[in-house]
Amino acid sequence: MARKISLQNIPQNIIRFIPQSSYFMLDYEGTLVPEIFDQNKPGAKLLRLLDEIPKLPGCRLAIFSKMKLGTLMNLFPYASFDLVGGYGLQIKPIMQPPFFAVDFRRYRPIVGEMLSSVRDIFPNREGYTIEDLGVGLSIQFDKSNLSKRKKKIQGFKDKWKGRMETYSLFSHIYENAFEIRPKFATKMTACRFLMNRFSGKMTPVYIGNDETDENVFSVLPINGIGIRVGFSRTKSSKSEAKYRLENPESVVKLLDLFSKRK
Image (cartoon, rainbow, N blue to C red; front, side, top):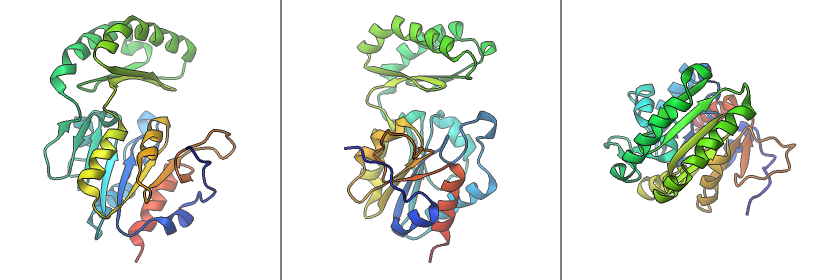
């Protein structure tokens, strides 16, 4: 059952509850960096922490992103941590080859058809950015004429509803994005895979900032720690996360405190 966000909402308080041996699983956009496109590159301090923490005794780290895995690998070419791209579709464990969480061959034909249609309906010149996720797709859009954009996307969604049901594809309209992906490939399934394969005796610590992270919080083991970023204390809504942090800067502060702890 969802619980109210804890008032333990500053890094100096939360760090007390994180064991020295932990598996950090970190959402990228909106959690480690701002959602704003031209501000979402990792800074020098963040890069240093992402490199240092997996080298601490009994620690491991993974980054989850909506970006395609290839884009994520280009962003972190010498990563000493696991990478999860495409909202959980693609997984690249450290020192192992990447793979899809679902059968690429099943979904590629239908996704190819949808991409051809999407590129005609949602041109870049009108403020849309389309990303091919391999077995899914993502449409990012700015917030101008938001109701008109969402209505246009809903029309596309309705048109492809039957085909998506046939292929067990999930679609969702977020605040400034629309995504289509296999129903069974999510951050939750990727998190379960990584925990089952690599966590061992480490405590899973998942940090995320939006509704796509809630199903991950809900499957963490009893000793797991969920931290929601940017979740307002004034809202009546609830989260499965135990703790909250205000913004990406607070997350970096938490990681910094962890790296310096004796």
